[in-house]
Image 1 (cartoon, rainbow, N blue to C red):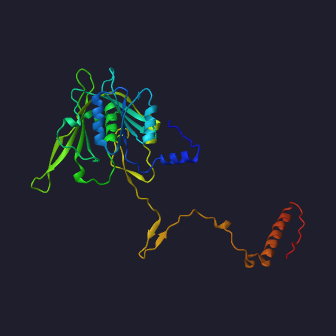
Image 2: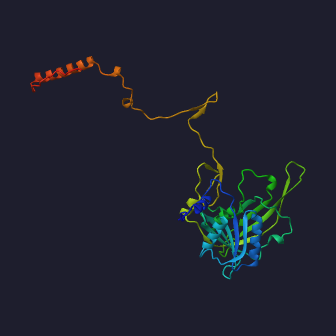
Image 3: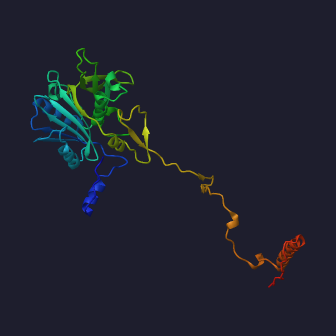
Length: 347
């Protein structure tokens, strides 16, 4: 369950108000940091990912004694302090060599984590590719190849697809300039090996080049620009059901665009929904006409103005007395009992 923090003074109340969820959240910021022991390969790859994510990234270069799966309190502190909901932690040890841990936070707390190990032999950095690089701040095109990512049952690969999409999706925008589509990030996963080892995830980054073709549509070519990373999956920490349900809540006035097979696998994109105004019409002149629906009214209890003309008259009182006398006389004929009848005084 999420911790509820109560403000102690006006200043803390204002700070908590700034952290409240918004209908349209800001672009997610990635915080990149390293542990006490981190290989040079992992440090170079973290620098390359920082270059792909700029300007929505923050890089820490100092050593941090953090063990994400044992105690993640330091990561939560860094997330709240820097307003970063995505973290990438690099470390290296004999048991877990060239480790990169991908972390997502919600409300300042750890949501889920994925641990990956870099294959050293096939890794290439940005500087090892002599081709031109993309500009800063571009929104990349993401593609996932392989049946492992399309598994209807949630597993490590579906979690990796979800996390990678959240990390590299960039800023949300309703329109995209075609000239800005210059980067493709592809994640490919094959089948499991015959010896039972899980399939690797291959990350490749390509630069889109448009050239003249003599026609209206240009000729499109792709060129690998780096980094080139092969991952093997390690430990995972999935989100709790209650926290995930809280994180997936949609504010009022927001509708979901597109289709979604599984809420745990694919991310959502939102668009503002126009508020429906019922029972309000506009006539030809331009005047607004409203329709009000009322319940059934009991007119017998309706309070009206008391007037002398509505009072009972003398004739009505005489008729009432005559009816009473006739009823009593019938009782005497039947021999029930004698009743003394007094004439009512009429005012």
